[in-house]
Image (cartoon, rainbow, N blue to C red; front, side, top):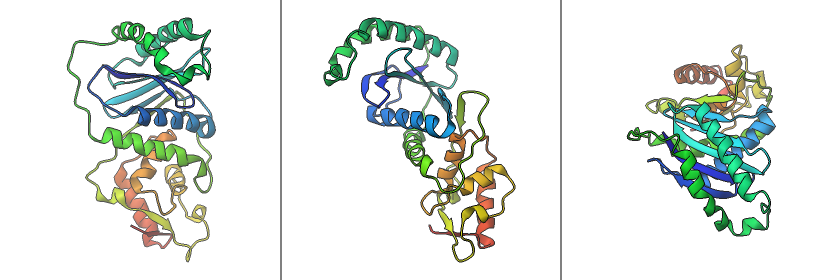
Length: 258
């Protein structure tokens, strides 16, 4: 089931926001999220990411073929991504037909002109909507959006090495760590009395080596796990990461600051 459809400029300017399901997410929050993901994909991953899966939700977006526009959909994870992408093509074709001749920065001073497109959007989206109740959406979804915006904004300034393995597809699947683990809120910093640089900490596992790049005295263990998933890593359990950081603390490499 489709919950929300957004049409916006690549700089984050919202043109159309339409809710079809039960999920309510602030328009500005979504715009910031999409902009951050685009920046992250271009600067860090260096490839196009067009789908992110977060528990029971998936977030799919696509760029227009000829306009400076992004089409985005938030839907249940069971919704067919291929069908949504077909809808994107139809939406883009119709949007270009209506606005290509007049689309400019001057036009964006009055976004009300784009409201004329909503009936066409409704017609196209109805092809994807099925007659069933919206499944329950976890309370952590909005919080995860906020975390992802911050993490993607900070990714390019992460300390140490930033070499990343390229994924084989354009989907990033994000799993929310178990909220019952209080250690997810732990924050670590480098113990400068023992080491000069975080890259000096021995770690054979590539996931742990990358995790150490996010040690800065500010990121929680949960933040680091989400960051690695954004980089495309299929992670071990959160408990394994907690144990690794505790081991580094015991050996004097790291110190827990909160």
